[in-house]
Image (tube, rainbow, N blue to C red; front, top):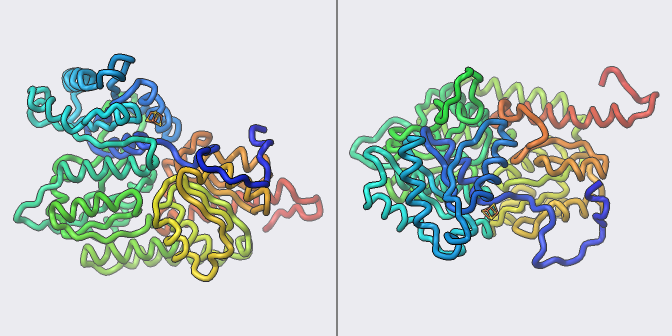
Length: 460
Ligand code: SF4
């Protein structure tokens, strides 16, 4: 196996990352852009970067991801990419006719100092942006942050560009969503509908990256937040921003620009994070929680009770995005599992504080690390020092799981070796049921495969 040389002995590393627990900023910017209706993402850099961003998303969502590139050559790398981007804008509007071009930078264009704001202004001044069409831009240098930072930067740019405050306050609530699956975005809208709250969800990749097969290719599928919806966000009563790392900057920008107050919540993953989200949404929409939502919670509680005996005391290693890890750790603690190792490649100074708040007096039971040097190699070393009963994370964990013979639950981006995950929500109470099913299936499957004949049970 590829990881057979991983040793349990840790050596202090300063400038080396092995098997990073993150991907690059523009991937996140591209994903956020795809959640806007009629938007064509544009990667200002080399063709190779754009190919990577597109393929990372296509491999996860199993959908064609359309995006344009400034297609840098050696010349543009030396003299700057302005001419390429101006030409690209003309070509894109005349050939592909999007409503919006969402331009993000790359390592190369940032390093040579291309000023996207100035280039886009020049395009506009030169009459290259047709009437009623828009270009937004976000700086996404990938040598800082991660795909989550890129997502946040693009979402902030979208909100800043479109949201407008008028004199009319609309009876609607904004939901700024962190990085979740299209099915999760659909679930957010369902929950809001059940609660009787009119919402604007941004971004919204449902019906963009989980489109039905109709036999007809649509470059701009029917999903995505529309321009009128984005504009109206400035008149909403309140914003509920879910996922601090991915949405806080956008929520603050919207508040500063349009005086729409916001409440910041975790992604509603698991029991308590969903409780907090439902309560924030109910408060923002000035409604009470309907019986249907309470019944969903009750079903989750019933399932936790039924499954608890199999979860109790099991040690778990997990890695991924902070916005997913915090509520997931909290949920694992709620079902009496033991999150033993937690890794995120996404930097952020408040990571440790947030972990301490979640674990409280159990903080000594967990080893955790985030930032550029927090990688899955480190996680593997910890697992070698003291094993775990379950591994949770994206596709790349399969090597560790195989080497160490650990049950493995795929969760987070990217999941490239399985199909269908984007159709099943893991947020809200119903999503929590799905997570529990996946965890227990994985543990039981492992038990069936490794138990002796006498212990091989038909009924668990
Ligand atoms: S060069 Fe930078 S932007 Fe391009 S794919 Fe690599 S990390 Fe991403």
